[in-house]
Image (cartoon, rainbow, N blue to C red; front, side, top):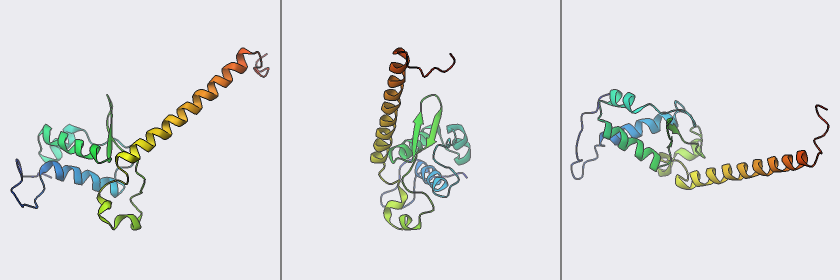
Length: 144
């Protein structure tokens, strides 16, 4: 798909700019299940070819998706579909204006990070307990 619009949007125009079209297309792929949480998003080069867009235009589209909580970056690996609270098949959640953005956006990302941090802290506590048991000689007799 090649989008012919470039530059600034005329005042009062409802015509989306190219970066908005790219972002909405990717949102629709996520909503429809074509892209699932954790899936890699198309690379910048792929999106540039698909939409006939410049590098900066694709970067703006990706920044918009990340800002709205639809995508996240993994340094050195690329951009990925973010986990969302609502699954694309929930008809009750797709009727209102909030249907175009992931529930919670930044709040959902913060909560996910807090859960991951709590899990990591628990794993550290478990490992510390195992180390204490091994250091005290109570290794359970395995391999002896």
